[in-house]
Image (cartoon, rainbow, N blue to C red; front, side, top):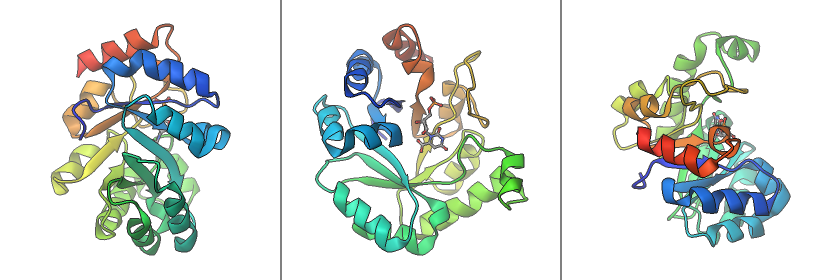
Length: 225
Ligand SMILES: O=C(O)c1cc(=O)[nH]c(=O)n1[C@@H]1O[C@H](COP(=O)(O)O)[C@@H](O)[C@H]1O
């Protein structure tokens, strides 16, 4: 874990916006998380520009494809000096093993278990009848077997998982300060609750980026930990 576990999620298509928020919150966060919206608009060059700010970068592309394609994508990312990248654990053991082999040695590789925007009803809709906790546990076990560094899970599962996998990385989105708008998130807790439950990284986007004063919002969250 980096010294400060708070990574700000910069979900914007605009490089200038991402740079401005990153500069404002830099004193209060441990790193930057760039995702699909940023990458589809700005590509690897945009990632390099963000890395110029000097903070660790978690590139959240949630890769999920056949093993050969995922491995190829990870080879393409080599050279960006990333702190962390992710794949979907639902891609299966062989895909995760191929990802492990292709990922740069200095980059942490983690797997998304069950998205924090899904609840038990949503899982039933995709054929998983026994709820988020059971599905997260199954996928975390598969992730560990594949030799990855850890998982993305919601704050609701992290206590059980971190007790069973003490050296694992537990990246936890679905974080909402008390009273904050949920948006599309369904399995949530506050930053302090998620950290106490065992998260090694907190990913927080809109509660910081949509605030009138992102620096103050990030500072308040950091102070609450
Ligand atoms: O892998 C992720 O980062 C991720 C996994 C997950 O299950 N849920 C989830 O919200 N995320 C990401 O975490 C960020 C959360 O953003 P906010 O909901 O705005 O705090 C977004 O950039 C999501 O893409």
